[in-house]
Length: 346
Image (cartoon, rainbow, N blue to C red; front, side, top):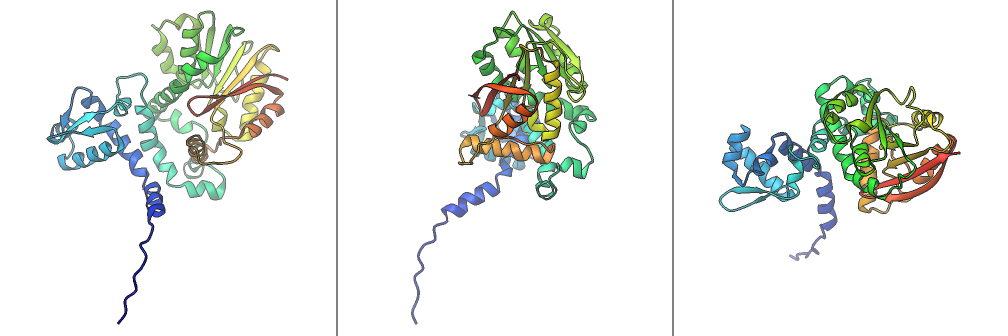
């Protein structure tokens, strides 16, 4: 009897694919850690799994398994004697800091999770999962749920803060005495701009679910006297007569038709000298699999399942702007993962 010796199989590619297939465990583990406030507890000093289980009212063995998963992700580190310590990355999930991403972790893991599981519905129909399954469009799901609105608005502040400082540093605001942030949420972008530009005044324009809490938030801030909050929908119109209009991560929420309506209202509100600045993630003309490409692809699919929107290439966005009587005056990368596009009235 003869035996055949089989060559060892190279499983590297399969293992890599399996890792991507199961990647959802990471967002869920991080979301639960944020909801349980584990980073807040570890910020006070290293804790044993048993102590954390008591403080979070969780089953000890189950919590320890979560902590080991979080240690694999770099959210905490596993020390001697079953003790866990907070890492620099994990500190970004604390609830008591201004520059973290805790709310975004909860928004993704808790509120976006149900719509992502029905991605195929969006692929087949071309519509958002929320529109198909719940009959809601735009931000109706946030406006009717105060708890969701609080998480969402805080998450938007977190994401905006990642880019606001860089934008305030590199952009030329010399001619911008009056600035309107269209759909500006809780005002994180205007906050950074007005802090750096003491000559400027800002108008924060958004729906009531965003504006209501913002007024109380800025009441005692250094910029309160220079910031006005106006409730409204950019589908009905925007404040007129400003020098600079900002649309940060707005158009990617909407179809081309809806985006054209928003741009049209901005164009009609703008004096001849005014500028429009868009801050958006841009889809590359050709995918090369870079970190920036993957971030754009992720948010593109997220816009599709949640809102029916999309990330656009530079050429697609320029076509939209041109049709709305704008001409692009500059375009430049804006870290992290964004692009700044400035337009003048055509």
